[in-house]
Length: 291
Ligand code: AMP
Image 1 (spheres, rainbow, N blue to C red):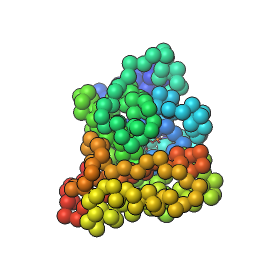
Image 2 (tube, rainbow, N blue to C red):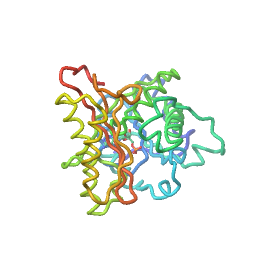
Image 3 (cartoon, rainbow, N blue to C red):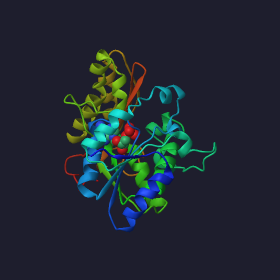
Image 4 (cartoon, protein in one colour):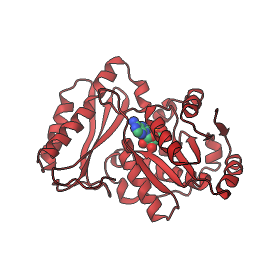
C-alpha cells in the first residue's frame, strides 16, 4: 500500500496520537531521503518489530557545514516513496524546512565529547545539527523504537548518548551497514560518483579492512595500524584521505593501544564527494556480545 504522507507536524500528530493511545508500537526510521538498500534495511527491521512504521525524509540544513553540499544533496521524493512502499512503511513524514525551523534561532543540543573526533573534528556543528533534529523528530513522532545505521557509527553513538543523557523514552537500534558486492558502503552521496570515482571509492573500505585484519592478527599499536591503512589509500590516485582513526566504541575517544573492541573509521574525498565508512575490529580473544 502507498504510504500516507504528512507534511506538517500537526498532521502527523493527528495521525499518530490515536495509534499511540491504542497501545500500538511505533517504529521510526529518520532519513534524509535519496533512499537506497541501506535505508530499506532499516525500514525492514522496523517493519518486523512494529505495528506502525514511520519514516521521515528531511534534508536537515542544520547539520550541513558546507552550503554547496546542502544544495547538491540529492532529493528524490517520488522514488523514495516507492522504496517506502516496497518496505511496508505506513507513514512518511516529509516536512519542509519552514515547518521544522519556523524561526531562525533554534535551541540546540550539544552532543558533548562523543562528537570531538572523527567527523566531529572536520565538520564543525554537524553533530549539534544531527542531535538537534533527531531530538525534534523524537518529540514529533514519539516512537517506541528508532533505527539508525552503523554506517554512521559516530551518529549512532551521539544518538545513544542523547537518549541516555536527556531521558528520551525511545529504544535505539543499530543496524548493520549494507554494502555493494565490492564492499563500498551504500550512501546517498554515491550517486554523485562517476564511473572512475566509483571504482576508486572502495579503497576506503579496503583500508579499514586492512586495519581490521591487523587488529585481528594481534597488532595493538594504533599508530602503526593507522599508518598501514593510510598507505593503502595513498597508493590510489584521485582520492584524498581526510582522516583515519581508531576509537573505543562507546565514547568515541581515540585509543593508543588496542586492548578490546574498537572502531576503525575514516573519511575520504573522491573528487568533490566526501565518503565515510567504519568497521568494528575485535582483537582475538576479546570478543564480547557486540552492540
Ligand atoms: P541518511 O539518509 O544518510 O541520513 O541516513 C539515514 C539512516 O540510514 C541513518 O541511520 C544511516 O546510518 C542509515 N544508513 C545510511 N546508509 C546506510 C547503509 N549503507 N547501511 C545501513 N544503514 C545506512
